[in-house]
Image 1 (spheres, rainbow, N blue to C red):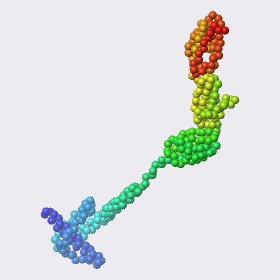
Image 2: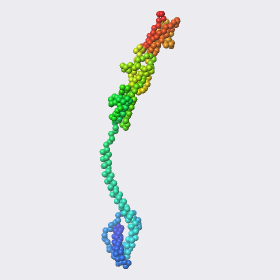
Image 3: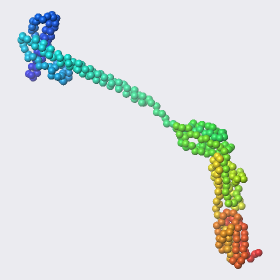
Image 4: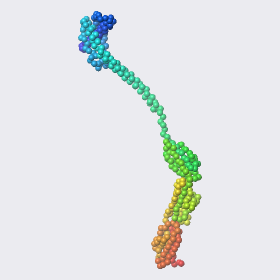
Length: 346
């Protein structure tokens, strides 16, 4: 505690000495003479001592505050001169550090006031950003697409998923995304297609509608019809039909045969139908022992029961073991055939 009080007294003396030195310097400059002025007597000042902020002088070099002259009594001669010397000696370090202290103070002010400005700016921008995000309207995903349909010749009826939508050429803009079945109907024929509709592109169907041809191969004579309309082949055994799906009925009444074939005919296409009728059967008996031949092929000795045979007309030969033979022409239908040979009759 005593040390602290002593230190305060020393600071007071130093300040008083400084005031006296400053008064002496001003008086000397005012007179501008080399004649020594009378030595002032320093009065003891009881003014409160203001300590410099520790943050400014904390890191100042030791040369800034040189050791002050030992305290002297106010009436000690030479005190003013010694105080002036101390002031002059401290002037250089103080002048050297003043710019640095000013820069430090400016930096502190910039950080303090700039920080407050930035904080205020961020606080004012955040609500605006939140409002902007909240007010943004989400873009709804597209759920429909477009389809452009054309045909040659034009004027074909357009049916999408069973619903008529107009005639070609036509663009449909309200189709649901995904796959659709499209049918084009005209006098020249009917075409069925499957198309995929996407949100970012226009799907297209462009078809030429003209006839195609069907050729039928059969092991026996047949008649051809579609519905109630008879279909007759030309000299090249081709039947001209419009494109599209056809249900063709092929039959032979004499053989009891009938079959329906489904054909998807494209424009200009040549389609073929080959018939392979199921086999029927034949049974051959004889009044005497003998061999049985069908279409030149021996199939066994009589009697022959339910021998497989194709539908149609066949030549049956029965050779008697005792000599002699008999020939027959038999039409085999879908119903099994039966042939009885009696060698006792002429």
